[in-house]
Image (cartoon, rainbow, N blue to C red; front, side, top):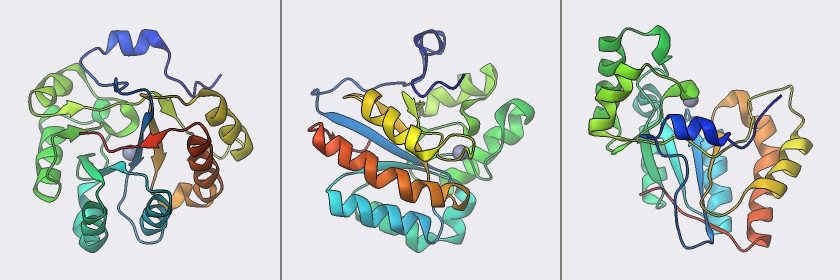
Length: 203
Ligand SMILES: [Zn+2]
């Protein structure tokens, strides 16, 4: 069973993390994880520009180091950025000090008060330290753009049915998801327009 919408008990349990954004009833918060990378990120930026929508990019520090010009483009086009560690470490199998070092190292490349843990998971200890420095941004709605087992038509259909104002929606700007994202994202953005929703960066 796959949940696109995060079940309420999970967000209740991790109440120090941000799962939704209360707002004016007509805004969603699109987020893109794991970039910036050539091809996928510029393609997303182009589509967002066309639609007049803004998003938040949770960047991997090492990708920013490798592709500083794409990172600059994200910022200059009015999007927000967040820290997603230096090398996409999995918190629960990474020693606390190396995990925190990785976040610090990424901070040298990504100036932001937002953090999202890779895989959505970290230890309680890591979380307690990081939430002093960052707002920990989770999500309301996961697209499964990376999961070959979920047909893209199902994702598009679910998005139409489920995404609503205040939701934080996760996509990925990595090459693994790119072919699928090219099918999903234009449809989802069209649908948001139809619903009269705009997309803003998380501030
Ligand atoms: Zn990630």
